[in-house]
Image: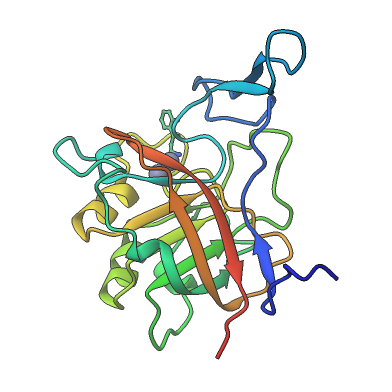
Length: 214
Ligand SMILES: Nc1ccccc1C(=O)C[C@H](N)C(=O)O
Ligand SMILES: [Zn+2]
Ligand SMILES: [Zn+2]
């Protein structure tokens, strides 16, 4: 075993960014290409990327759903690091409602697993959203961050984006596109920092869960 291996187990809950990554219908495809190849003129390999700010696993900035709201470079990082509760929401169709929420003593962060198996290779329009009522209920319990393995907290065809508006109203943070395959319901430490993009309406994340320590 590598001497670098942490004593506490780590789950990588991030999508792998690569060409062909399923993206929101109509949004920018993820593209990656070498701009310099190591060899004759260059001592190193370097690539360039083109992508939507909502590619793969990401955190939404309040600016995404509020014009005068904070960009991703300005938000505090506290919501993105610390103890979280993973909730098994597999089998719920449509949107997660208040009645689907577990009795919670206290949790600052709640992540919902909606997929039996994450759809890495195709866009699925029928993902499970989260109702605005459920978001308000979570806010009332003190929850500061809501995460989901679905690509949005609102349904794909929503124009009123009620869940996002409820999040804005309660100044919560959102993680979308998490990969929770093989993660059991329970408590973990979350670390998922969005990239610091000035004016960014979202930031790509490398998201992990870590086994709780002493
Ligand atoms: N790329 C988009 C283009 C148009 C409308 C929405 C998106 C989204 O990505 C939704 C997003 N993931 C969200 O719920 O925050
Ligand atoms: Zn998003
Ligand atoms: Zn969103």
